Image (cartoon, rainbow, N blue to C red; front, side, top):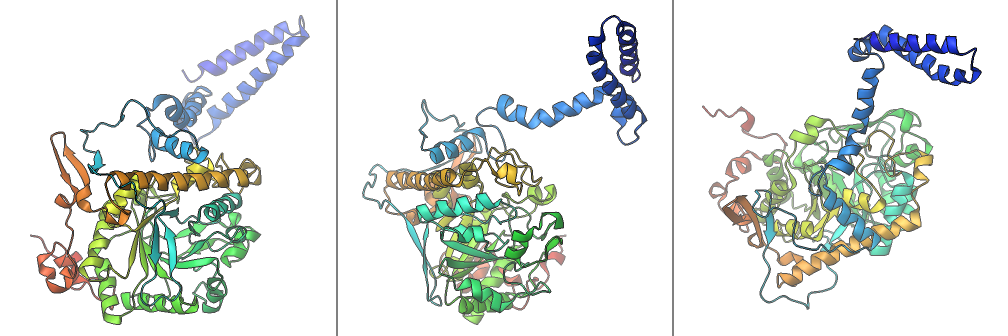
Length: 536
């Protein structure tokens, strides 16, 4: 079988050779035959690919269709409710709102309301049409002297380097137009973040990009120089992220051009290593001392943390450390284990890290049970695409939400899943100037602005229909989840929700007693080490 194609090609070439004197124009047919003969010969002789060796040329046809598979599936095979991470309807909704097209849907829902994946919010017989047109969240606890008023939906962390220069510039211009903030991601505060002056949350990761010394450690002087800028509204310490919790990262030296090197404070052309853990602190108390240092150096701006929840006792260790030291975080952003724009090993994306819903509930319970919730704001980050996403996050305790991929759709992302290859077809996640050419800043900034505005307006519609004044009034009992085809429950009937000071007054009466007892302020390790507990 494997020799059939080469034999046929040789026969064809022989026939053409006899026919060529009679008709010289047949040489144009001979050229592709010769090329195919060479390809077939190479396939037979190479030793890396079994299929090509056994089935020369034919095996390449299989690879061709394999390369087309994602596009054929996305545009032809999938239904409107299929597709991951975002289905067609979710993407279409983001596109419609970004373009200011009609985003309403006729003829009822396409969702299966008796599916175990279905959940819903409870409306009221008496809607409240007097609800405010815009919702803001005041961020900044008693130790913050420069509080910030955040929008209900903001741009989540995406770094310059992971995103293109034009994408960063466009997102920030959209944020300026809409009055919401733009998180820098751990890649530093670049000239493209600064160009239009939109509000910035500066994320500080373990690489300390933009505020690092030559040996990769935190540099207070470099931090202060940027943190005091008026455009920088808040400081966010990244402990982990949902895309790859517990892992650092590396930007290959080939991608470290002059602009990225200047932004991150690293050498041009050298591999950029982002460690898995911070060097500025190793214990809960040291973390809070670092928070206090950043707050002082920034002139009193809000300082918080972002993390994907992993081991619960570590969250409670931070709560205990705040109670012990009196140093209070201004905000906490919970990143869902669902992942995001960052490429990561499949095992980490699929199986490591707590999903947003459980993580948000746990952190909210930790704050309430410790008596700290009134001073600390809580944000959710993970697969936010609609007003319903915002409302459901609010029901679980979020004061506001951040979105990354939703805003990428507003920029024109087609979910080609090429983010990590530098071959993004829409110019969003590539450093290729030719691919970025299609991204027109002025046009796409309007789309970013409209997506945020209309999604926030959709949240207001939900608040009105629920008869409430604000998303902060949405409670767990307003959110219902179907357990099976014949049974459903409100979220507070499925998950525990603590009362104020429950962890201080009677921790043994809570579902978290084991983790609270294991939490310590002098280490993130559990004591006693619950990983060694016997269950026999």
